Length: 317
Image (cartoon, rainbow, N blue to C red):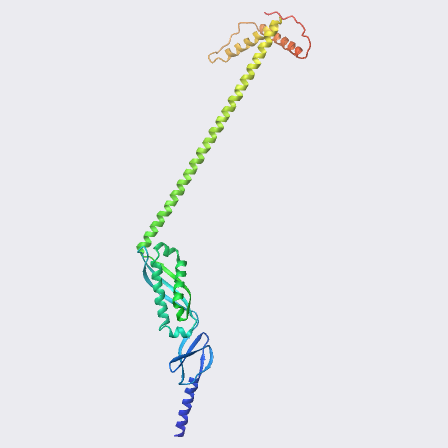
C-alpha cells in the first residue's frame, strides 16, 4: 500500500513538474491564460508556470510564413475572364492579437487577399492587368496590410504568380500581335522605298543641275572663244587693210593665200569629193606664202619700234 502511494506521488510530481516548467522554442511565442483569460506572452526560452492556475493558450509562429493563394476566375473591366493565382508572405508581430483578434488567421488572410484580387483586377481592363503586374502587387499589398494590421500581422509581399486569359482570347491576341508586326514591317518597307525614291530623285536633280551648269560653262567658254577669234580676225583684217593702204603688196598676198587655203580645206573635207584636181601651179602658192613671211617680218619690226624696210614684192605668177 505504501509503495502504491509513493508511485502516485511520483507521477503527480512529474505531472506538476511538466506543467511548471515550459520551454518555448526559437521562432515561437506562447500565450499564457489564467483560468482561461489571457495574461501574458512567453518569449523563446525557459519559463515557469503555476500548474492548474496558469496554462498555455496559443502557440504562435513568429517567423515569416508563405500562404498560397489558389487560382480563381476574375472578370476584368472590359468583361474578359482571366484566371489568377498568387502567393502571400506575412509575419505575426503581435502574438496576442493574432491569437485572440481573429479566429483563423490563415483562412481570414486568404479570404481577404482573394477578395482584393478580384477588386483590383476588376477595376482594370485586360491589357492593364497583363502589363501592370507591379502596380497590382503594390495596390494589393497596401490594402491587405492595412486590413490585417489589427490582427497583429505584417504582410511583407503579395505576388501575382499567373494571369491566364482564356485560350480563344490568347489566340486572338496572338493574331492581333502578328497583324501589328506585319503592319509595322510594311510601314518600314514603305518608308524605305520612299527614302530610296527621294534619294534617287535628289541625285537625278543634282545630276541635272551639274549637267546644266556644265553646259552653261561650256557655252560660256565657247562664246568667249568665238569672241576672241572674232577679235583676232578683226585685228588681222585691220592690219591687212592698213598694210594695203600703205602700199604693201605682201598684205594682199596674205589675204589671198589665207582664203585660198581655206577653200582647199573645204574642198578636201567635202563628203562627196573622192578626187581633188589642182589646176594651178604650186609656185603660186609658195609666192603667196613668201608674201606672208615678209608681212610677218614687217609687223615684228613695227612692234620693236624700227622702221620697216621696203622690199620688192615677189612677182605673182
